Image (cartoon, rainbow, N blue to C red):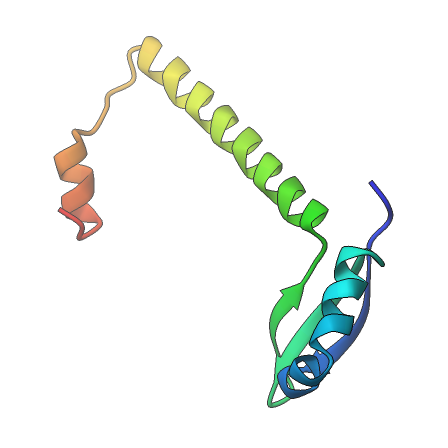
Length: 92
């Protein structure tokens, strides 16, 4: 993977006016461009490889956590029923 760097911060208005350039800099120049609104960082336009790497890392972390939970269950650790978890989180 090519080295990626943050090149600059630009406003959302400027990004809209230079949309093709911003997209090309991220896609082909492998630059990370932070878009701002009212002087505050809002979002980033990043190369697709960055997103794929983040997804891969998240998947690896999910697997690691699932393996740890599985080991705890196999070791006889107590579990909490799903309906209790949902209720505690206000989703059930």
